[in-house]
Length: 192
Image (tube, rainbow, N blue to C red; front, top):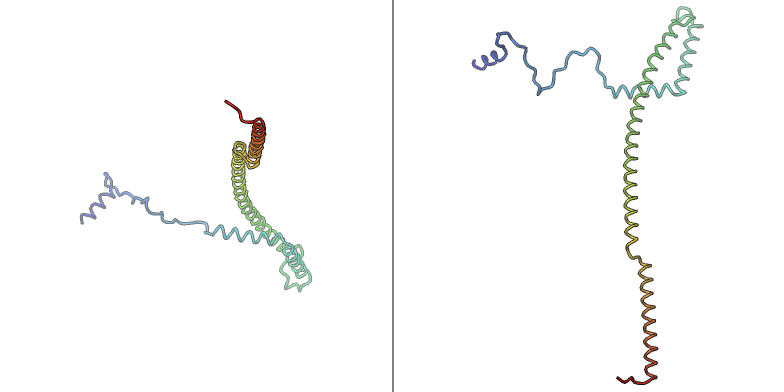
């Protein structure tokens, strides 16, 4: 009983008038009345692409030509009671206009979907190119740093040439010492 009085008191204002119930923000809003039919845009887009692909083929032109020839032939040579579209072929004109009025938007929708896919592909390609350029610049800087570092590092050829120079110097010193010691032996012992 006390809970009911509290809920009544909470729903009435200071004037005693009833307030509409508050909508809760933590719950989704109930779906309202929809005037337009609902459809899956992705499925409709795929459907429009299939139609646009078919309309762009020679098979469509052949079928359309055959249908028009049969239509005209039937309505010219069939018995008068079985004809549904007399000579000016008003109904045929209406059907072709109807087909064109649906074909053009479906083709445009398919083109828009293709444009969207192309835009996403181009964006991904652009990002990939940016990453490739950044990687190339990084590798170029690293190679330049390695070359500068190698300029200061002793290479195998440089060490080999230095060792060969040392070996030559040692051989020259040894030759000079042996020639001096040979001369000293010939002169005899030196006195202090």
